[in-house]
Length: 309
Ligand SMILES: CC1=C(CCC(=O)O)c2cc3nc(cc4[nH]c(cc5[nH]c(cc1n2)c(C)c5CCC(=O)O)c(CCC(=O)O)c4C)C(CCC(=O)O)=C3C
Ligand SMILES: [Fe+2]
Image 1 (cartoon, rainbow, N blue to C red):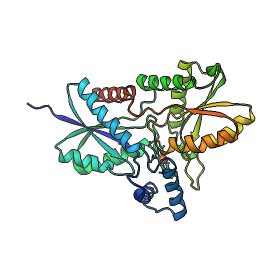
Image 2 (image 1 turned 90 degrees about the vertical axis):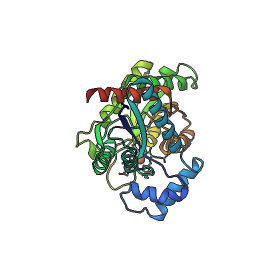
Image 3 (image 1 turned 180 degrees about the horizontal axis):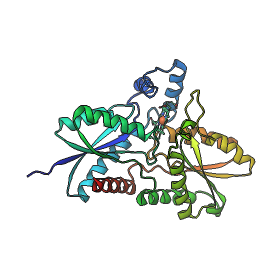
Image 4 (image 1 turned 60 degrees about the vertical axis):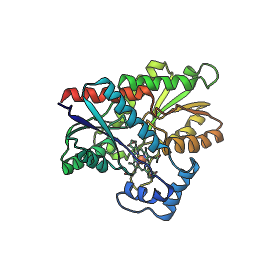
C-alpha cells in the first residue's frame, strides 16, 4: 500500500512579484485599504533602492524545497511541502487548495518566523485554519515557535562569530550587539504576548554562547500608524549609543530568517547611512536563508511536532 502523503504548509510573509504588484501587496497588508499615492511611492522607492525587488520569494522557495527534501531523507513518512504566503501569491489559501487538489488529507504547518506573536504567527495560523476548514484538509498541528531550537541557535552563533572578525581588536568585548526583530504595536504588552520575551531568550542564549560583553535587544521597521509601537527603534538607539561613546555596532536581526526589505533596506541602507553620519562602524550578520542548519531546525521541529500528534 502506498504511503499516505503528509502536506507541509510552509508559510512566509510574501513579497510583490513585480513593481506593478506593490500596490496590491500594500493594500493586502493594510487589510484592503489602498495606501495613499505618497505612501505607495515611498514603498516602491524602497524596493528600487534594494535593486528593484526583494529576493524574498526565491529564498522562501529554496527554503521550502530544501525542507521537503530533508524531511523525506529523515522520516519514513512521505512529505510534500507547499509554500503559502500571508500577503502575496501563492497565498496560504492557494497552498491549501493545491493540497486538496493533490489528494492530500493531512497537513502540518510552520511559519518561517521563529518567535510567536498573536499579531504575526497567530494571524498566519488563523488563515491556515480557516483555509483548511474550507478545503477539507485535516491540520494535524501548527508549529508555534522555535526560537530556542539548538540548530537555529547554532546557525546564529556561527553568523555572529563570522561577522565579529570584521571589527578590529577584541570585538567580543568592544562591539555593542543589537539583537533585533520587527516592532509590533505596544498593545501586545498588555495582551501578555510572548514575542518580546522570546526575542530576549534567543538573544541571551546567543550572547552567552559567543561570550558577548555588550548586547541588548532592539526593535526595527515599525509601521507608521496612529498607535504606539514597541521601541526604542534601532535608529533612535544608534543616536543614543553614539552619545554614550559607542563606536562599533553589530545588528543581528534574529526576528527574520531571510534577506528582504526590512534587512536590505531598513538595516543595510537606512541604518547604515545613519551610522556613517554618526561615525559608527556598523555591521550586520548574514541572513540564514537556506543555511542547512536552519533547514535542519525546521525539519526537526516538524518531526517533533508530528511525534506529539
Ligand atoms: C512581525 C512582522 C514580521 C516578521 C515576522 C514575519 O516574517 O511574519 C514582518 C516581516 C515582513 N514585513 C515585510 C514587509 C512589510 N510589512 C509591512 C507592515 C507591517 N509588518 C508588520 C509585522 C511584521 N512584518 C506589521 C504589524 C505591519 C503593519 C501593518 C499590519 O498591521 O499588518 C509593510 C507595509 C509598509 C510599512 O509599514 O513598512 C511592508 C512592506 C516583509 C517583506 C519585505 C519584502 O518584500 O522583502 C517581511 C518579511
Ligand atoms: Fe512587515
